[in-house]
Length: 320
Image (spheres, rainbow, N blue to C red):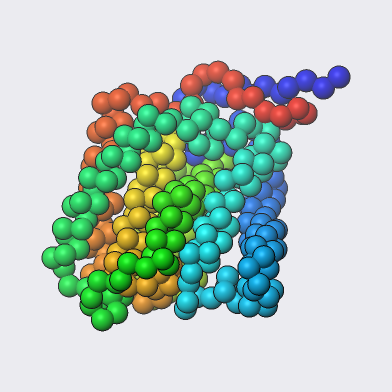
């Protein structure tokens, strides 16, 4: 007769060390990273590709043309954006499965030290992120930039059915896409590096570097911009004990980028930026530092738990 395994953590266990209270062998963490990459980049992509190609077949589009439309980086459509977003969002259930099967912990412990997403705190962080974006837009309007390269002819885009399609996809799927990236980089990878190496700064820095590298070919300003975002999001995860602040900042950041593309530019340029200006760091740092300045005191006033309480982390059946 099998029984549920109960793992008792030490009092005050910080977010980046939570995996140490599960099956903590180093090879499990390595296998988990490989499984995450294989599942998100290969298995899920194949399943989504087959599903989307089948959908295109219903409207008379052949498999080869459907695959070209989905993989196009120069003529992105709402369907193509949905395909990309769902692929990234798949990291959430993949991380849940890896944490349960390989590490013997409940999936909620990737979300926060409370063992779940703290929804009221998430709403607070979303409001603070929205306030931060107002300041970010103001600063962005004051500093020099290469916005003309993004904005095309400098005019406002026409409102078309394609634009409305993008709006629907962005509203419905961008939060899941952003959360998927946070679960993978600021969630699982932060806990993996924390469990393996123990040091908080390593658990914050290495996932931030990998996050920037994962976006592919890019100029130095774009890489540094993404690295700065990852460092701040990682710091907030450890400082607040969960993914909520990072998810909120990521979602609002993407809403701003996509909104600007719909108004003045094109979606493909935003999704695959390879070149940029060092002036973009002014807006990125404004967004990041203002958000930190708002979130940290808010967490302190709320007396938000930033360490796992003394208690039990319930894992799956089997031996830990």
